[in-house]
Length: 238
Image 1 (spheres, rainbow, N blue to C red):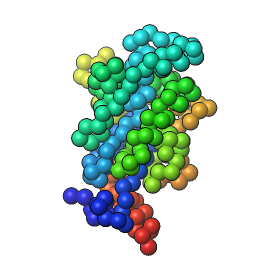
Image 2 (cartoon, one colour):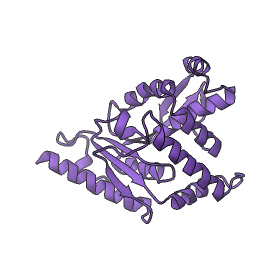
Image 3 (spheres, rainbow, N blue to C red):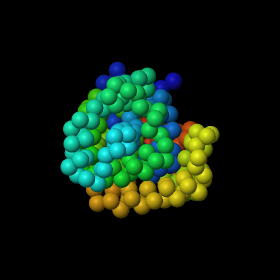
């Protein structure tokens, strides 16, 4: 049952826009889904948007380092989102690719693609449109710093790199031909790429609440977040 402060019908508690940023494997997806479920909010995995672009680039064998070829591809890129029970499903050329974009290859490609100004500009409008109505929990790497700097409350999740790699390894399909060492190596490389890129680097927003979830489970993280949200609302209503 949702606590009273998140009854959207109450005039003192309008819908909130909540951002959760952090590196790969920090638990953003699990925590974001749980938090959205508890609040009865929509959930937006913005990383999935970049994965969708990466997926289309791989399928079409596009050289994303070729700016002209990338720009031409984006002009024809037909990505739409459709709300489901607690989030969105992504369709490329009317094909549901939501469950096809979760591979190490797509992850690394998405990290590289996300550094391209043309891609970020292309997806910026889509993300902001999704956030207009609020009542949304969105996760990514620059949600609180670039996409939604005006968010009502911002979180930044982090965890020990080895713990993050183990979590991501457990998420892989049983038949995936990857090892924990592969995941750890790729994750560290992605951390470096995302943190050092000139355009929208991975970093906490100045006003983000930082949570180290190395030794705590997702349910506990959500409880911490809920407590922070309740305190924020009470402070606003005083």
